[in-house]
Length: 255
Image (tube, rainbow, N blue to C red; front, top):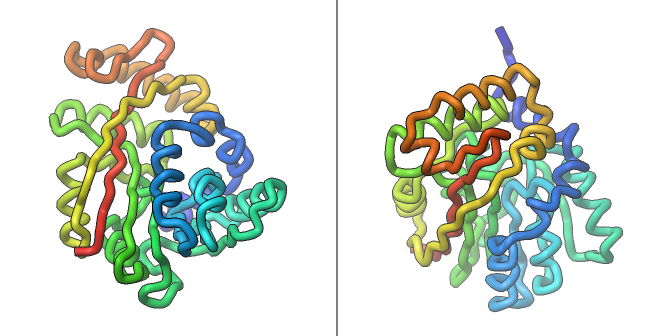
């Protein structure tokens, strides 16, 4: 029986793998990342919060257009890797801060923009995190949230949550688009434009990056092999484990 908190599990999962996430090609590029950079470029010179920064790729892309970017994450090791990479790239306006999204250590109205990419499915309390993000946003500010989303079908939802948790014990939930929009409204946001994407996942790289034990790797492959036809079709399961994830980027303004 473990006594670790969820935050400790998240930090324990990602801290030792900081370098892998900084160097990960699938995290360092993508249409969603380009969208986030363009979002900041349309509002230049502001203070930006990268919420759950991970390998820091949002911060690196936002920095050329911002006065300051604060990369915020649970993992001290991840933040150290982000700080080192930002320094190597000459991004002097990238700062790091450690903590949980549910209790942001910033005063009200501290940021012009809030960004978050592939982080919320690890949060223990997404409504609280979104409320905190709203609290630290200045009047006239805006946010862009990007994450994996679950399909609305319960059958598809059950399979993707099981696969995600087997791969990564810090996984909480891939929320559906409808759940995201409801949580945003409840936290004081007005959900805006949505861009949906399909992400091709290389199974070997996806599991190796997280250090998924071989027992769980075999379990995921077994789930895929035994999945109903409509599940296999939606996620595009391949014999080697490769598949597709659904993702969405959601703009939000203060309500």
